[in-house]
Image (cartoon, rainbow, N blue to C red; front, side, top):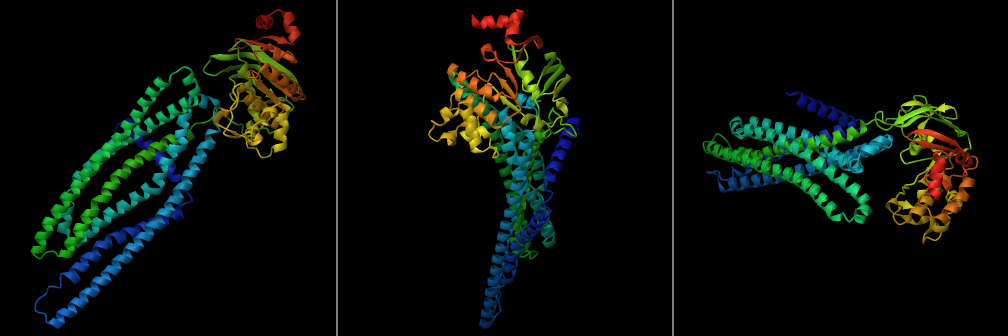
Length: 600
């Protein structure tokens, strides 16, 4: 076995062990299901015996000669009663099988859905703990596929495959043992075609495993493409790229179609070959069994039992091979799900994080160096201090590192060198959730969730009352457009808030931040999408909002940050100037040039 194959088998075994771990707590259910499977299998084996015995005992004896009329009549009555009893017994067996199957299916489906629910919850919960780098590098469609399609593919393994594998193995062994016990010669002829069937199964497993893997990859690729392009549909239409995108979609869709078709063709060839093998085995048994019956070496009932068993013997073999293929698909999905669960956040929570009930809002950067990748530093030896309640603005050209500073304050990334402290505590030692809950961040690109106006302001936090929602909206003048909507605060919001203007979405973002009453305000080009008149209203609200709160602003329009207590000028990742608006103008440096450029 090659090293690559050995690694693949080890990985499959690891995935299977992890999937089996989810069965913990369902041991009683599994025992009941196994018990029911054994009953069903035993009764399936017993059904042909009932009919075979009836043929030998009650049908094959009706034509006996040398009997008087009275004896013949008594014999016929006896045979009739025997056939009736056999029929009742057969019906009882069918009913027991039906109820056992019903209970087994119900218990398995309930168990399977519970496990899938648990896995889906675990995957989504884990995704929310991952760092921003992960989301920057992982397509949304891929994550959607992992949480939905791949977890659902595991459902079949828990509800169908594992039990069917066990049941089919028991059935094959049961058929073989019973056939040998009834007639070893006919059993030998029945098993003649097993070696070629075994070769077919091995070949089929190899092909189906590759086909399943290709299909899952093609499905992920298509979902990723769909997610990305549906989100960017407006841009596609703006640049009239519909035809090109359609061709790209057609190419991916065709790839998935071919992958599914490859699967279908493999099954379409495999199933008939197994059926041919079963027919040949049946023909062989019929011929040899007829010869033995004519010679008196076997009864007609025995021949019937073997004919019935042959028809059923190859069915679990075929199912077994197909289930191995489906199991491979489930394991492939399991690999993908566990690859997400195996992702670890770059940000590590301290073992005993400091939890603060209230932050004062003092922020210190001490010789901070930061790079998103390798040593391509965005910030280089940056140091500054922001006192509690102070209003500080960062300005500079695009790529100077302003937004990176905001991301670092909320600890969405970790720095490579230096130290960031809030209230004198290194943010690496602070509880991350507590830290971020103390920071209200307003960004230029506002994201709204499907729901209504009030749920987007309080983000489904029931602790924030509707009165507080309305107060926050009124504070930033969002209430002026909200109250004009047909349903007001209950007005539905579509995905990403597409029915609202950019300015309205920005106002909702301000109201959202206010509703959570943060100690530190962070605003990244917060008024960029708002008209001049609305901006004037917001500036008035912000003056009230910023009272007593540490406020950090990033803006390209210098007119919006002239009221700041301190303005820090960034250039190529370093602090070049620092002071008030008037002080910086007097320095005759970068800030003055930016200010004059905007005035001109």
